[in-house]
Length: 326
Ligand code: NDP
Image (cartoon, rainbow, N blue to C red; front, side, top):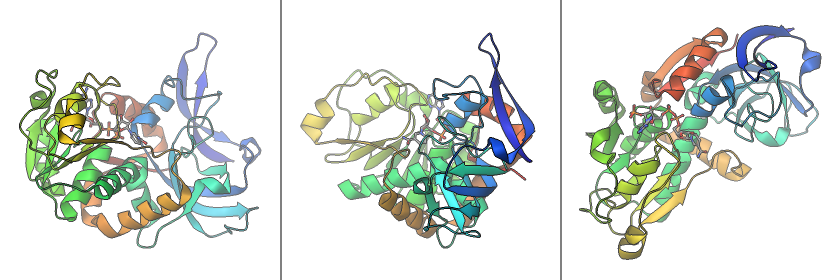
C-alpha cells in the first residue's frame, strides 16, 4: 500500500481530492515503477486537483504533472533499480496517473535521468515551470537576444521566478512584471534589476509600435499583456510565449513582426523531444544558481495540495512549491 492524492468525481460531476492509501495493483501499466521522492505544483496541477479543466480523462485520478525519485523496478534496458529519474510532461498527471503519490508506473520514454549536479528535491523545485523557463531562454538565445533588459512577465510565479534567476545569472538585465508589488524584494534577490507594475502593461494595444525597450521577453501571461509588449520589443528581438495566466487571447496586430522583425516563439514543454529535454536539464544544472532556486521554494506535503491547487489558480503562489510525498 502507498499514499496518493486521489481526485474523485461524484454523479453530479463535482470533484473532491483527498489522501488515500492505495494498493500497488491499482498502478497503471508501464515499463518503469518509480518510488517518488518529490513532486511540485504547477498551474496545470491546480486545474487537475480541482475540476480538471478538461485535462483529466478518467476518475479516480492521481494528479501531479512532475515527479522525481528512484527506479524501483524496470522492464526497460535504459533504467535499472536505484537509478534517479525525473519526469515532466507527456500528459502524466492529466491523462495518466501522476506524481502526487509515493509510487508511479510510467513509460520509460517519458523519463529523463536525474541530471548531474541536481538532487531530486532540487529537480522538483525546478519542475515543469522551471524546465519551461529554461526552454524559453534557450529559444531566445537561438534567435539572438538584443541589447537591453529582458522582460519576464508573471515574474513572481514559477516560470517567471526561474526565468528571472537564469537570465540574471547569464548576465542579462532583467525587468520583472508583477501584479504583486510586495514581491519586489524577492524578485530583486533573484536578480531582477527592474520591477514593472502589471497595470503598466495590461492596457489594450492603442499603438501597434511603441518605443523599443526590451531585448527579449519570456511571457507567462499572454492575452493583452503579450499583445502590448510585442510593440515594445527591440528590432529583431524575440518573445518566448510560454503561458496564459492572463488570458488565451492575443488582441495584437502583425505590425511588430512586419516592421521590426520581432519573433514570437512558441514554447511547449509537454511533448518536447528527449534530446532537447536532456539539453535543457543540463543547462539548468549549469545556469540556475542553486541558492536562488532554494530562495523560491515553499515546502508542502500531499494533504496541502487541494488548497495549493486553488491558490495557484488565483495567482497566489510565489515561486515554486516542493511536495515531499513521503
Ligand atoms: P504561476 O501561477 O506560478 O505563475 C503565473 C504568474 O502570472 C502569477 O504568479 C502572476 O505573477 C501572473 N498572473 C496571474 N494572473 C495574472 C493576470 N490575470 N494577469 C497578469 N498576470 C497574471 O504559474 P506557472 O509559472 O506555473 O505557469 C505560468 C503560465 O505558464 C501558466 O499559464 C501555465 O499554464 C503556463 N505553462 C506553460 C507551459 C508550456 O509548456 N508552455 C509549461 C508550464 C507552464 P505576478 O504575481 O508576479 O504578477
